[in-house]
Amino acid sequence: MVGKVAGLDEAGRGALAGPLVAALVICESCPLVVKDSKLLSSKQRNHVYQWLSKNNIFFKTEIISARQINNRGIGWANKEVFRRLIKITPADNYIVDGLLKIKKAESIVNADATILPVILAGIVAKVTRDKIMTEFNNDPKFRKYCWHKNKGYGTKDHLELIIKHGMCRYHRTVFCTTAVKRYNHGGGYGGATAD
Image (tube, rainbow, N blue to C red; front, side):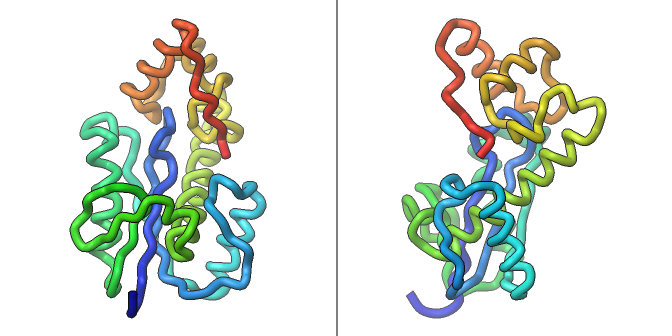
């Protein structure tokens, strides 16, 4: 693989609330110890994000709202968010984590744990999405969902708050309905965590 490589990854695909956020990063080397964003603490992810910003490493983010996910589905959203990033960013190669078929991109399973620009894209996406969820939580209307803690994921507490208060405009209706039904029938909540 030669030339400028753009790595892409997303955050929030399986969440019950909030947007899907994807990032694209072009970076050949990084002095920090980095790994899959899910294996880093919030503090570690923020440290990497700050390093990228301070060193003018190229990155972009794109967002698909919960409303758009409700209207068009998560499958469409996951592909569309990457298509948008590729369309606005010139690169010689694009690598996406997973098994998605996206024009111009090479999909590699576990790229978010093995390929530097993809790992960094996952970190940028996660930090960006966490900030959005914290901002949503700052609105008194939505504080009751504790998004500053669960970041919109299907934690036990979040599910119980949805059952208690109902859904709001930032919830993904199909995801929530399915998760609540499973939870109410003793199927658990999937063990989702905010990190």
